[in-house]
Image (cartoon, rainbow, N blue to C red; front, side):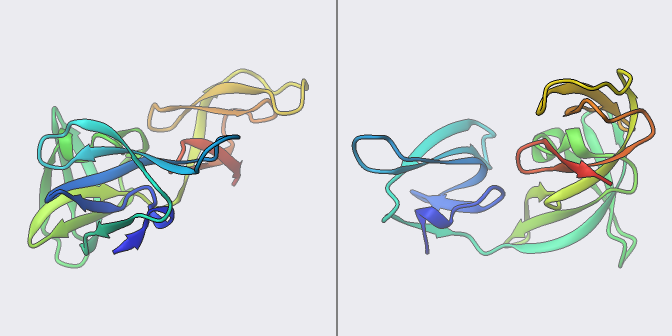
Length: 183
């Protein structure tokens, strides 16, 4: 059991005997009233997204999972192919299992496969991943904090500062999809 304030993106929670994966967590502190923890979650069995709110004092059951690092190989339609680098076993995972991380996948990316009682639950990412900028507008000076779109080596598009140019390596925070720093 963990406190609602300890809920993090990627956690697997068991609520009313249903397993949920946490997609997003926001701590809400209204000017009037009590603070709340708002979590966007996905039902692991059905794939349905839901929004849940918890009081900070609530206890929530966090499911213990086994984790294995696996390497992304390629995508074939709705099937994603991975390999366990220790055993060289190849795994096929469905679109529904990796849906939340497809934006970050590229060949040879290392991710973590979470299992519970031998059943594959989800795939989680490292907190930060680096990408090479393939295409973006030329660097420019402008308003501090202004951003532009940059297409990276796997085809995903991220918002980056104006000084980034094609060929730069950038580091993205995978929890929120935001630019973190230049690599």
